Structure formats: structure tokens, C-alpha cells
Image (cartoon, rainbow, N blue to C red; front, side, top):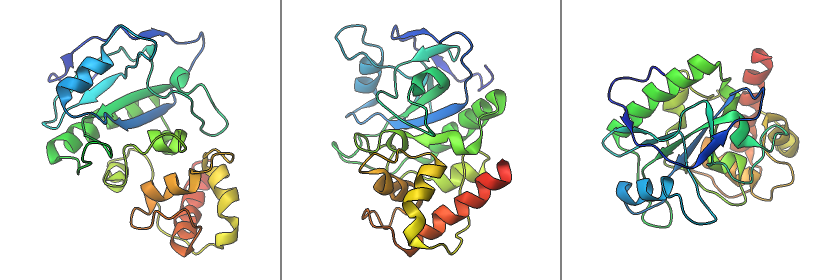
Amino acid sequence: MNCGSGVIDTPSPNHEPRPVGATIDMLVLHYTGMKSAHDALDRLTDPTGDNRVSAHYMIDEAGRVHRLVAEARRAWHAGFAYWRGWRDINDRSIGIELVNPGHEFGYTTFPKAQMEALVGLAADIVSRHAIPGRNVVGHSDIAPDRKLDPGELFDWRRLALAGVGQWPEPVVTNPAVVPDLLARYGYNPDAASSLSAFQRRFCPMQIDGVAGVETAAMLGGLMGLINAAD
């Protein structure tokens, strides 16, 4: 682990071994969706109840990084999910929670210190595990009918410029092929909200669930990126 000396070890009991032979090839970003960092830490480290959750890291608004679960272990952050045909996302992913009240408690922008800490941590993770840009996702990407996080205010472009994830240049594309391209990129073709989840991430000014020109162009650009990577 090489994400800096400022990491605060705050162990969560909510984890288990990864399956034998599992490869870490995904990074999943979340917001905590709770009123405070204290509430979020309590939730992520609570050993009681039937719905125990955790993540590998949590970053608060001041940029403090809490390490909750060792990367070698399986944390419980993705829930029922899908990406590129995979469903057991917790088996293969590292999860990072960003302290933010979320849409339920007054969604807000992500502070500069928090984003800077995320860029450093995420860049280190994707480098060490050789995680492809296509597999850096938000919770809403892998669970579009259940989740909105990290949401339309999250700066995915900034992260991509730091080498984490992907951000395309638009390419003129026929909107009629959007459903097929969404599935090719990784979204669940059977989820009703996959298109809205895509827009929340790549077209945050147009979250209407309609396959318009801008949405098609961003998908067309992403196809070029994944074809080049393949």
C-alpha cells in the first residue's frame, strides 16, 4: 500500500476473503449519503445488523483518508450490481467512499481537498492493480436502478485527466445505436436507468433518459477509447 503517510487506519469488521484466484480489476466510487463523516464511519464500521456495509477507503471533506478494509480482502460496498457482464463486483473491486450528504441530505460539490486526496489515492490504486480506465466506475454505473452516487456534481473529467478512468472527446454518432453502445461499454442492458446513469456521469447537464445527440456523441467517443485500449 503506497498512498501516503496520512492514511488513518480505521478498521471495519465487515469484510471477508476474496474468492480464490480473484483479480482486482475494478475501482468503484461512492458517496456516503449521510449527514456527517462521523455518521458514515459509524455505518461503515458497524458490525451489527443484517445489512452490514464497508468499503476499502473513506475520504472526508478535508481530504483525510481512512483505510477501513485491506485491499486484499473483499469489502461490502457494491451490492446487487452489474458491469460488462460481471455481477459479483465486490469480488473484483476496490471501493472508495467520499463523504457527501448525497441527494437525500443536501447534495453538494466535492471539496478541493477531498478531490486532491482522491486523485492521489485512486491513481496509486489503478497503477498497482493495472485497472483499465473502463473499469473505473461510479456506484450508479453498476447499480443504475438503485443508486445515484457519486452523482452529477462529481468531476469525472478531472479524474480522467489524472489517468484514472476515461473521458472522451465527442464523436458524431447516430442516437439510434445508443442502447447497443451502452451495453458494449459495460452498462446493464436490462436496467431501466442505465441511460440516465450514463448521462449523470458523462452528460450531467442533460439527465433526461433520452438518447439525444450529446449522449450519442459521448458514447461514440468512448467506443474509440475502448477500441484503442483493446
